[in-house]
Amino acid sequence: MITMATPPLGPKLAFVFGYLRLPSPRWNYHLAVRRRLAWHCQQNGLRVGRVFIDDNCQHADIDMDISRAAFANMCARIPEEQPYGVLVLRPGDLSNDKMLALRLASQIWATGVELLTVRGELPPRPVAVQDSNPLRSNESDSV
Image (cartoon, rainbow, N blue to C red; front, side, top):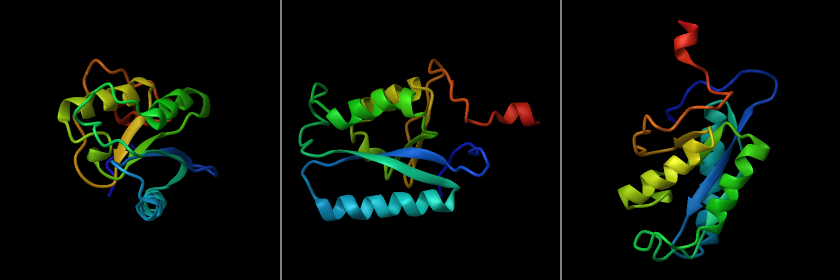
């Protein structure tokens, strides 16, 4: 189950962007991951919007300067499209290198959205990253 704040309820389901990083193009895997993200969203009251895919990222965990065009495009679209969050199948879709994964996660959190995973544990959210997502429920306000 996805660990997350409760998304807003209403006639329109909150949507998330999906993100996937692969060392080489594997279209059957792309399709399977899209189905898995959609199923998890359905189970948690969300829907999948765009899924951004960086493939051919063979050295992305070694070289921090490797271009991740889909990741950059996703982060640029967040303010415009205002998803509830970004959903990854597993934390390794950001990076298998913990420092790089934290850096990429921080870029997502800095846009004000949630970072969600289907399985595995995400890096801890730094206190310095402000939570500015208006769709995130603040549990302290409801108590």
